[in-house]
Image 1: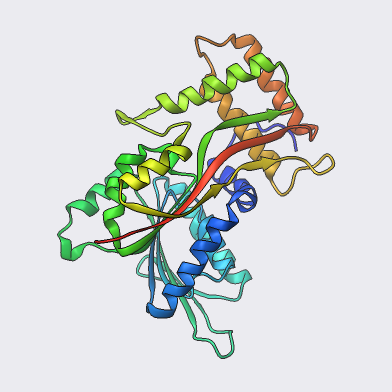
Image 2 (image 1 turned 60 degrees about the horizontal axis):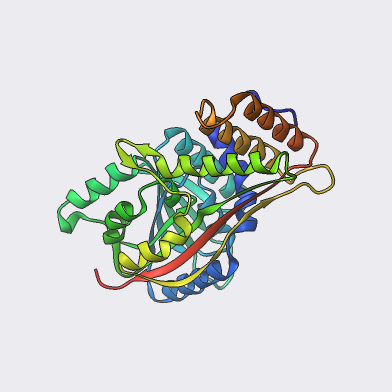
Length: 322
């Protein structure tokens, strides 16, 4: 592909799916799988809430692994564009996989009747556009008898973008007694571009890029951290989560031959451009040299030479009490 002149976040999320698929820690995923399967044997229907759901790729992943036999799934994202793309992708997924789909009361109702000897599968998907803390505050202020409680909370590549302790304090009360959490792809302090261009300058860019994460503010509040992954061990325990499984979920993107898989060249171009956007006009960085560095990284993608690694952590746990 040629170097993009503009970028769309929805395409980035679509390109990221195959990267996430490889990265997600399989031990953590299997522990969640076992627990969900056990609960679906004794629960009529699971209730799931996903934060930062993007274009619905986690819903697709759970459906592909047959983890949603009977469930109500609420997918929350603050960008209406993402919600619309998720709606379209889920409809396409249903058509490709033999599921019946209909829109009912603003939700997507998916049903599958083709498994001989097994009960029909039914998944109701509610796609909602709302800012995280606005949504959580609204839920907190509702009368207790009107509050929806969930069996499972999901956040993928999300908790490192928000004030994690503040978010957890409002998210976890939405769980039922012994509810579950699956928090995956939490960035943890390593951004690696290979091959090196100028090792000392490469290291300076990485350090300054991570600092922008630590200093990021949204609506006057801290918004994410470059070491969210390791910090979540304490944040989760302090919030009352028993961690049942944890493990690394590193993004590792490289070419096979001269070509990247799927749309992962676009993913890499997007990452390089994200670094550019974060550090343009940074007073500690020689800007002319930095722009040359950005151009070289884009050219490495075009030549199939760039290797990109980001270190991240996944968590699965439970919360006792109500």
